[in-house]
Image 1 (spheres, rainbow, N blue to C red):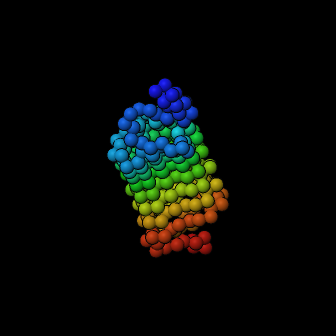
Image 2 (cartoon, rainbow, N blue to C red):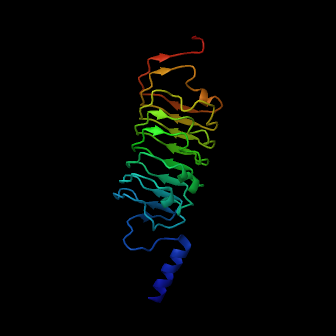
Image 3 (cartoon, rainbow, N blue to C red):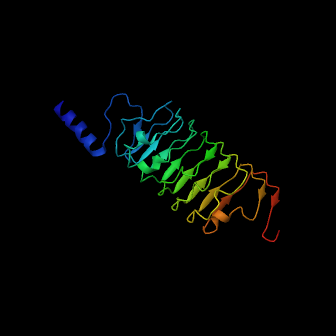
Length: 216
């Protein structure tokens, strides 16, 4: 019995693993906490503090409180897809300074506000597909200088303009397919003027008009 307790103590010390009975989340060797498909309505508070990735997808979450996630400050990947989120707390990225991948697809966002991602400066991937996003307020992606991948597909966007000033200088892939974009004017991609974009997907939009610089 003494050896068993010692082994458990060592395991906890090395991996920081929660020993709370009944925790339904699975912790893998690469410090990923898989809490998906558990009908969760709140973020678990008894996970290892040093997890690198947290999968909260396919649950019943209505919020992602920054205070609840701040204890997992080593997170590099956060998946909160397939929930009922409708608002993003800017303070979340302020607490998770190492976050590189954020997945918010298949939620209920209708608007991206100016300050939503102000502190998400280390993000390289942002997934916002399959929400109801129709409005971009100001320049919410302006601070995302390290962003390489942005998925805004399957929303209700009527314009490709994701801001009114140049930004996203390092963006490589942009997905705007399956929106409601019917016209491409000459200002459509001015916000990407300094990027080295390699892939742009505008498929499955009701495009009927394309304005060139020659058109006045």
